[in-house]
Image (cartoon, rainbow, N blue to C red; front, top):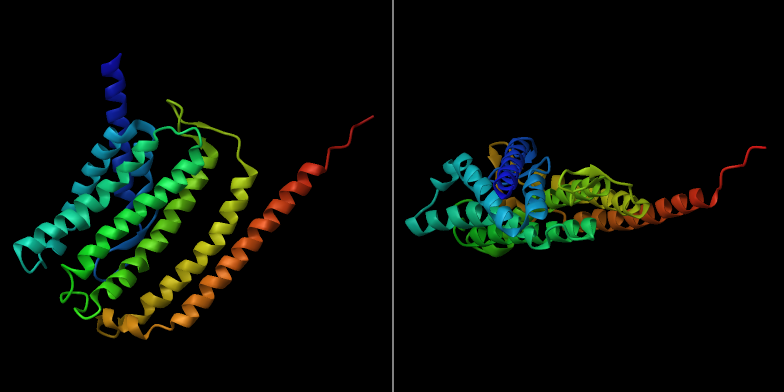
Length: 273
């Protein structure tokens, strides 16, 4: 029985790894010096941890990190020293993607959506931190200016990790609101109207963030390719205004959705005579 269960978990995690790997090639936007906004490619790996626990979550995410490393070996070739090469392999690939499995600590938490959304935010932040560290240390002077390396790394890596996080969190909440991932075999569940209101608000905010990303991305484009130093010329006031408007409209969208749902609840069907 135990062997059968282990085999089933192995097969499930393998399928989720394959799904994540395929989704990683569906890039909404591909950054010039590494990093991309994908079709929620981290989602299957995070789900593997939530469904099967920390051990299987880390095994799954570590395996996925190896696949990511193999597809990104060309980036490692830019390392200026052996130490830099090791740092890139560990922080930009192994650790950066293995942290996704940490969500296994909240295995099948009874508050499914809350645990998944919060957990996803945390592991995405940890991945962002890994890329930030290599950006301002290893890549400083290579693809990122040495001067103010930390700032450029923060902005550059945030330019794709923030939209990637928004996409992942949104899709995760959508999936969690529709499917009970705690069951041995995932089954559909009754959708929470409150969560749908939150999702609508988050979607609007997410669109604003992606628009900001496009502004920053366009700023670093040149006729010859990309120049990261041009980030400094970004109209940060415009970026801030768009984000603020997104937050306000997102909040209004949430409130309006809640009001509409509440109104529907108060309208009782007429009884036929």
